[in-house]
Amino acid sequence: MIFFRRSRLKVGAAERGARRVAGRSVGALDARLPVAEGGGLLRKAFPGHWSFLLGELALYSLLVLVLTGVYLTLFFKPEMREVTYDGSYQPLSGVRMSHAFSSTLRISFDVRGGLLIRQMHHWAAIVFVAAIGVHLLRVFFTGAFRKPREVNWMVGVTLFLLALAEGFAGYSLPDDLLSGTGLRIAQGIMLSVPVAGTYLSMFAFGAEFPGEDIVARLYALHVLLLPGLILALVTLHLLLVLRLKHTQWSARGRTNSNVVGKPLFPHFAATSGGLFCVVFGLLAALGGLAQVNPVWVYGPYRPDQASTGAQPDWYVGFLEGALRLVPPWETTLAGHTVMWNVLLPAVVLPLALFAVLYAYPFVEAWVTGDRREHHLCDRPRDRPVRTGLGVAAVTGYGVLLLAGGNDVVAHTFGISLNALTWVLRVALVVLPVVAFRVAKGVCLALREAEHERLAEGTETGQVRQTISGGYEETHRPADEEQRYAALHGSLPAVPREPDDAPDDGTAVRRARGRLRHWFTGSPVPRPRPAGGESQPCERSGGDASGS
Image (cartoon, rainbow, N blue to C red):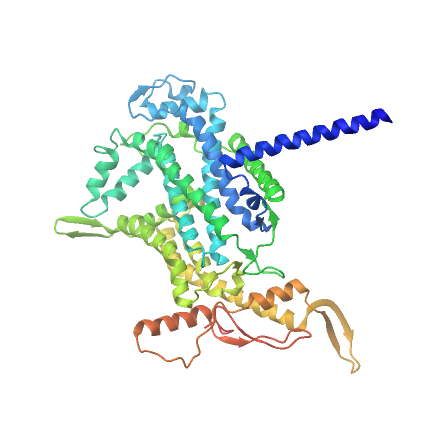
């Protein structure tokens, strides 16, 4: 018994000593770093819905890009100087090529693990851009770009733009026949800019195409400038998320003033860490099993050659499709030829696209007059017009992406290339309009069905005979979650101005009133909930007629 008590005393003294050491260590760190302030951060709540992990998917793809990119920079030579290839790939032995292409072949065939890392890098770039795009769509369809997150939306759009530029720069570095064809198209786009086009081309290439400097300049952009900007904006984006807190889906107990979810540590950290392992594992599997960008098949770039069936990566495929759909329009003004068939799809279209993306949060706020803070996500069905606009934009993008491979599609299915081009031109005008109306109608139909379930209950599938000899189907009341989502998801976005509001007669006010009526719709009565009173509601996106 005495021995046992002494052991306990020794253990207690050891624990107290360990605590004193830990306390002194934390105090020393807190005197130099904001350790104590991190306690609140560790308790920060993160919503548990899967759609909020799309941003983490982009972040971890970027991390894989950085890790694999650092490895590739140890072996890649960004030089246009010609050498004679004498590496392991025998079909190109003795062929004259640039040092950039030769070093790419060396990475693929002679460096241990080089092909795996190179293909992981390429797949990570594809996933990175796709994750940013899907994340932006999630933010758009749920209205998470509204006040106070307009700046964070603009940061996300800028990240998407930089990711496109970064992907194109990396895609062009190997100096193979496919990437060289893409650079030739890029030079043609530069030349289409009136007056300044030739200066832009000479500045980028350093001489007449293909020049000697383009690969070295793209390499500097790809490994220094663009990654630095992307990492800086990712840091700013995360800081804004911490400052403004996450949006969350509307549910009982969730309001504009709280966030319900998992604490950062250890619950969300474990979930997010598991996602990183999954992303890394899937990218490694793709890099080892799915071939991507086999530059040795294309061969080195030659200005007098072009790769048959050349297709860019998917994220710039819509620009290729736009180039193929615009008719060969040209105008000569004061001795200068304006190539509308290149200027409109490759310069004006991207500028207009990103201008709309940057401006949309402010335009919607101006149209609706909504200046309040929003921390709850909209269900897409509750904003039919916004949802319809998003679906129309995605449909137009899909048509342009398909047009980017119209030659391959025509050859594969044995149809006329000219006929397919005209079909896609018509589809680019018609399909987005059809998609808008269909998406808006589906949203309204979902709302009607939801209101019907709220008023009559959910069908049970059981039929019973009434006293009068007829038959009727039994219903059970909607559960609390459905009832809450239906009642609170239908709340108007803003207090509507009465129809008899004084009009100052200005054209801007009248136009804004028409746009507001089109976007937010008109008030309609809400059906009587089972066991409750009928309440008026304002349907977002129009009345039942779809006006």
